[in-house]
Image 1 (spheres, rainbow, N blue to C red):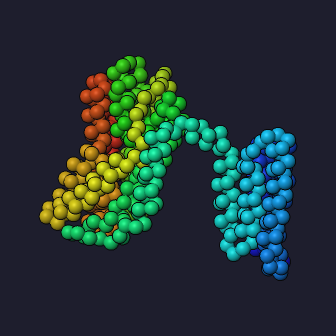
Image 2: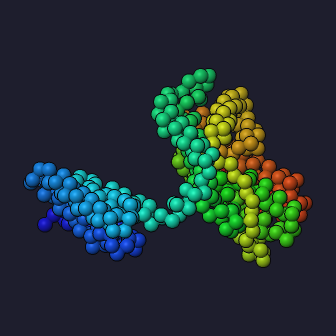
Image 3: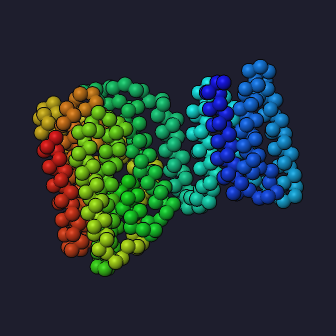
Length: 413
């Protein structure tokens, strides 16, 4: 008996069970498909694929027959109940296709992944509808514009270095813009789904992925309105700022994983320590829920993407020149200055320069850490001058501890 063939049949049945359970919970009694039906459809798919080895076109015949049955069922349900939804019917056809995939080549490895994604989409119907209702027309247009630039124009850009010092690569630069904006957009969508008013924990964590500066600014304004929100605001500001360090580490893992072992110490120490300090403050606070009023600009807007791209190119050139004429010291000064404006650009720049051996790995890690510290100092200034002196002092003490741990980490690298 072929063990692999048995495994493929088991996977096909499991796919039918998974999708069938979800549909059984959502469909009405009058609809045709429940868990048993979906199991049979998945089984029909893999059996059809198996028989097609001996009888050509058997899969096509089975698919046409199933489509006719589903079409008749849909006609009856719409006639009797007026329900014109096609979700269950399309899910049934996809289940058949997934069953077929389980038999052919390496399809049994891909089919479960698609089945999980399909089931997730089916189960998240309320959340997806809620998200669609919350998306504004401007956000939709900005998203479409960026998607066109990312997935239509990006493949057309030349993937080669050009210009002085050979650091300008149009494809690579725009790919990094897409990557950074993608991280921000994921956090932005999460914030739009749950809303900043749902909890300071989410405000700090998700807001930190989008813009920790925006969170600190919002908290400073709230504290100026009411001192009773002090500890809660300090928590959100510190956690959001700490998420920046974890975001930097994620970017390095994707862009230049070879730097990850060296960067792990400063970034993870500062990120985790900051979150722990924030939780310590939060536990002593009696106010844990508030409207944080965080104003986050859609990161898929074209203007911020172009600004990031221009800044990224500028930092690449500045860092290259600084390294040529001033060595690692020049790179460090450039990173500190760059960190004031944007920590993502200097992070990606250093990762790519280290990858091309323009700077050493140690120099890149030190520069990234200094940039993150510089950015943290700027946020301390925001807390102090836009909030109250007490808020600035409380945030500053925690930031000082975080910065000290980061500096100690890079000294010991």
